[in-house]
Length: 358
Ligand code: MRU
Image (cartoon, rainbow, N blue to C red; front, side, top):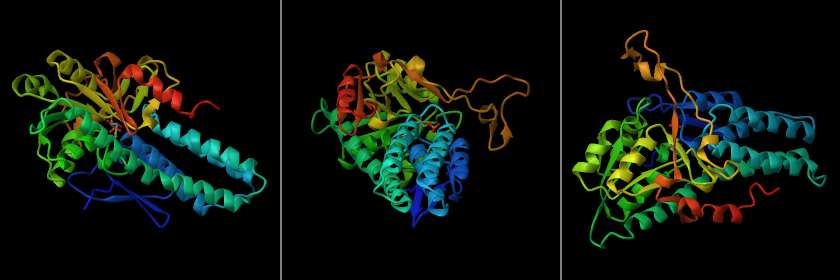
């Protein structure tokens, strides 16, 4: 059975509590926007696509249970709640883009005199509903484009070895995953010899979540600490690094889990291609470069404690940025659901996207 981070059944929303994994499998009910904000902020659900989906679904839960006097009030409530949800975590752009599209839809529906308030709610909920399916379809496409790209210069009978960082799989998305989707696709094609996943300090998404997914799906994998990447690349031939993204700027600079940047530098030194796998909803064309991406800083406790046990000396100061920015010059390609692009080619996508032209 596939791992399910988000359960959306008969209008009820539950998320798998990722703080407790892999030891305990427990779903947390999300009864509205306030709960949605909390599960995102506390990282019970995390990963850029999953954050966007859970945020929007938490609004859907609330809209099903609330009555509003008129369309204008409904529109105002939608806008306010969506803007609030975006504030839960600032770096991943997917939730911002999703909420902007939903606010635009709410504006359009509220101005349409031919529909009633219940029709407006219905159409709005349908749009949110479609996000789960679209995310899975996009991830499968990313997986296949990515596998094809990594295999393009590899002789037909050879297998590949890849490194991935953080968790970008079923637990970070509606299913299948982005960078881990590429790994899954390579495995499905019987072309994956091995995947190495980094521990991903301080929150340990690699050790706790990616390792869990690999074991669950019987994908041959090995866990390494974050500081072992250079030694690994020196001692074993690595075909590619594939990571996810929280926000890709228009020039291809990419914010992803802290540690991605140093892996990219090491990969460059060893001549290993580094790919970013992300849906188009992770690309922020309004930001010209990575310097403009807001980087979330998390509480010290995530560094100083492990399972409530203090591991750092009392009194030490901490710096805990959740993400870093890998410059486009270190990125071989950006794997999206519509194909693979070199960072400088991203403008092609901008031109084909109407997202921000209104
Ligand atoms: O802090 P997290 O766990 O939300 O960070 C997750 C990542 O950095 C992922 O690589 C990214 O969101 C892509 S998930 C498909």
